[in-house]
Image (cartoon, rainbow, N blue to C red; front, side):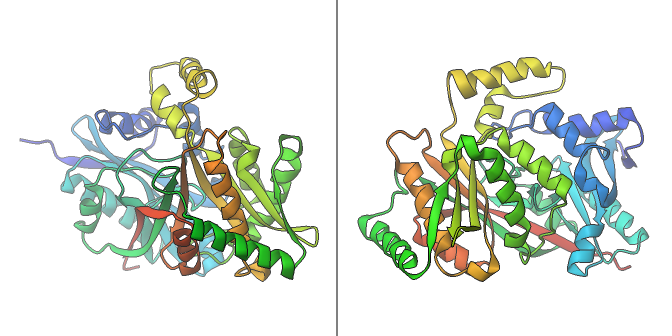
Length: 388
């Protein structure tokens, strides 16, 4: 007879260790899963260190069958999100579970009850913990995740949808281009060039590529533009100064100035595009895991990163245009630059991932499609009323 399921709040070090380590057990035989460095995972989960917890409150839970962990979930409320969007919702994240509907039901019910007890009207997710981090459930395109994007087994979709009452609220997409099947034809390249040339005749605009010597100033411009460029996106909540600092610190470790560009109109920066090398290609080979000193993992990572370079993917996670300058072609200028980097003879990059993109953002979807990119992954947000 199977042991009964008990979901318990993480209350001490032993509980936290079970929550922290569970993915390594769950994904032990999955060739696609790519773990974070242990220090990075601790920083995300540590409520005293992760700057997002300045405006959130929540709890972590572990589902147990007897004395063995069987799943995990986080339930939390993002007060900044609720204030910004006029909502009264909670979120769930870090949902990990064996292919066991009873365990999934218990975890999701626990998070829903947590939200109901606090008078919140709905539970939405998965999200861990904001839209600036890993969010959404992967529902197609099950392969190695790119940097800062989620990965989960295919059966998670059925577990959530069969839990009762959860419905889709939004899909987001990732797009892909490579240097083989994804190259633009001559007509597409010419059309892109005509748009850029027409734009340059109409306004005093120029595209400036990042440089190592100006990295500090470039990241300051990015910080100034980021919240303005994203302010009306579904689910977006403006980042605090501390969050922006943390994001810049993280991305600067992987900064390749060739992948950063800024569009200036009359000398003022009004748009930016920041792609980064896909460090997940390194992490998958270094494979951080509990019980292995991180120094050893970092030495393996250094080998695959600097000595025998393995990164041939880049990801475009950040791109934005000030509202007054949208629909003028500035985004096409930036995509032209990234395409030129991708096909340059001296580039190490052979693949470009652009994501995520809201399913409702038809202008950007059209631009990416016309730029030769193909949709190859979908991420889904679910929601269920709490009855509160």
